[in-house]
Length: 156
Image (cartoon, rainbow, N blue to C red; front, side):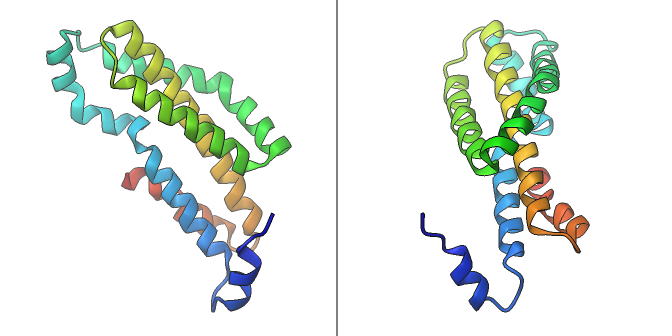
């Protein structure tokens, strides 16, 4: 497989790892749909439109947070075995399917399952793989690189 990284690394006036950090931040930005603060914007509208009680949406978020407890160790093991790129691709595809399925949601149970699983997949695969990717590229400035790469999610 041909890689663009070695050619770019030779021509850039700065360390190529910073390009990786920007890419990691962008990936974090794209997963913002499953972050807890984003659904708060739609909280009242969804409750009114679907006729759900106010506890349904936080319940789905809690379901996702509990599922992360079980999924994150497996995501870490898969990132070690197959590499963060594969974990991000599979996780991204699964998150995309969950977002499409959310558009068809018509019951609270369906919302619990889809949003809970989507949140768990996003948090476990993205956070584990992105942290591993950043850590691989930096030794001396790892703290700064981790801080910059972590900015994408909250910006989203």
